Length: 433
Image (cartoon, rainbow, N blue to C red):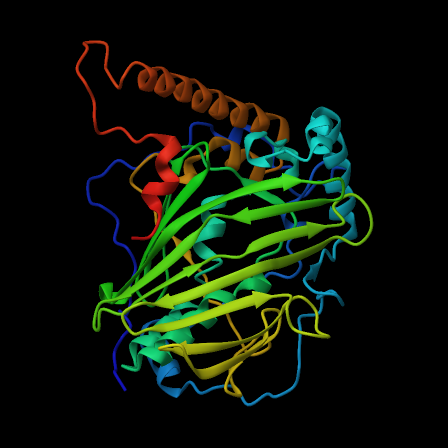
């Protein structure tokens, strides 16, 4: 077993003699109304069922925990309390559900004909800020999916077995699913918006919104002492039906381990929200995830919803090496996951790690968004004004880029430019090689 994988007592140091950015609004001029429960606005505290209990381990404590870790002894079939009988998670807070439905009905009045046509992409339509929470999508896509990396990825660093690393990577990619749902929408990142965070083991998170339409966020996650790199784009298309929302993922992820050059690539599943206007509101992860290690000829496909007589959140799959099964995977992303009967994930035993935001020296960081800061104190009207101002700037700049493209990427002086990305080809450029 390898030792000392954690970067002890890590925290990003502030830059000396650097003038850090400030918010563009003075919050002290506004009353904090976040505690007021308005009938037509969503409060963040109501959207999160029960805030997760985060790990308090740091430095050497994480290292000691890793050295003592063993598969969990539980053998029962368990799922989280708000799991739905047919699969997925239920929206527990009826008050929030009713508010979101009320706001949703107003929204449908404006765009109803597009929904009825069946050709309606929600990512192209601005949402009212009163239906959102004071978090950037970058925070969601960067922090929640990596909440168990200080456990599973550091365990992976302590073994040389490529199949064992493959297992630990798979479980890291599905163990966070039970944490994801708040049934309220984070703020869409503005083109060029960034996020910079870290974990107590010394790993770092960097994200940037690199495309407006289609919306694409790119993440780079580095392990302690640069021991591994985890990266990839987050892109999706969300479409609305009469009583549902479907989020089709166009994302992928890749991890590279520095010590043995092992590379694992995986696709991401889709999400389905039913009962958005009537009935029980449910969030399901649907479709499949494929994991591939080309060099070591390791492969696994997790299909959601294909286990007979079980809810849609259950999985039953195999890990193949050179097309031969070497391990079985069973469980549910809402409760437990076992490899050949060894339980690597049990939500009752899990304590996620909390990603901490690093103080950013650049004004593009999401924490410097005026609309997000105003939304956090319940100033919905002011937040909406600042949100619309940002969106106006983004649309204006998009028109300038389009005109520049149509002019052959030439600046006013007539000099050709060849270093400008064409948004239409971003998907192809980001595809795995």
